[in-house]
Image 1 (cartoon, rainbow, N blue to C red):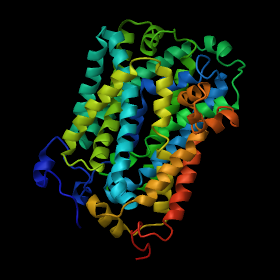
Image 2: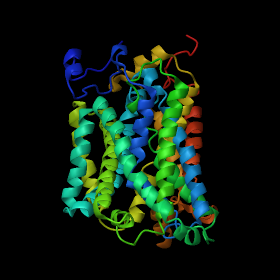
Image 3: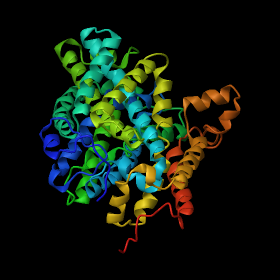
Image 4: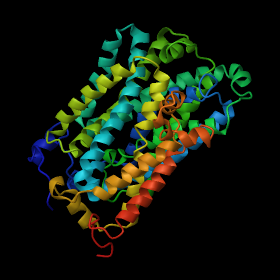
Length: 478
């Protein structure tokens, strides 16, 4: 089988090293290892972050203004639907032994570089959003300088993500226990104060159906946004791995953790002071040694989340055509994520949070639509693997999927609900017609960009490649 050259051709040297040097090459059968529950543990640990807690707060009285049970329902709905994306996408990992950006060569050909840049930006956006809370946790616990605190977040996550797959999985399984202990303590405190929530948070609300679906879309985006990374974390599993078990391990790891975190944030929203999120949590649990332990758990949860996203970001930049060793690329991307975090620390975090989370993940919807069409055609495995390991420069142009991706993204924007869209409308900017116009005028502020993007992306790609040479993946019956 033809394949791209790696920077460490000596398999024995690579195997003996703590650092993973495999880039976009397929994992050999003899190097496959791991169990399905390891994947569930990784996904569970990656969602135990203050970022998810903050999402739940957005649905409360100080955010979208939904009643408690309306916000509760939106959180469950959004995460259950959103977790289906990465759970389904993960199935291609053991089957091919390839990260997603290598697989993306089949539909996108030479345009894979565009997907790599988009995917890396999305991963870095998630990293930066979480790093803010991790840095705040260290500031609250130890009074550190903000920049120093951010550096400590990226120092640890950079170390683990550069080390690669094996170290990352071990770290995530450990963090699943340590970080969960911190959130269990927070949950116990919140449950002990439920009497203060029943009156204020569960009462009537003036927020309408649009706010309900906006909250569902925000929750959906947080879990669904992992879909383009999913195969990266399970490609070392044996090819014989049970597909149903892998699907449910991924789904449960994401959905259970996200629902827990966001409902905890929603329930605690009326108990939290109007200070920084981490300071409010520290005060809620009474400070002291328990407060310090919880802040450390918050920091480690952020690192666990950022590590997985950072690992994928390195692979995605390789997919964009960068010809450097994977560990070096991962380290470089860490520096970009650090810079974005410093930017997000200034100004209105609420607006930036929703803008980055939604606008940075809308493209994933038409991408998943394209992927559904690709795998729905049941490509021949040998032809698929041959093409996925062929250098990008000699592949087809990828014009059709790139058009489908762009059309799907643009078609989704009028159905979006973001602060950017609202600002454009208030300033009478003509661009307001494109960003959120249907959401504001017809949908009462609801955000339906994701389903629209999936559907439009799938339809456009299906039509353009129905008789196209840009889909040379073999006869499914060969």
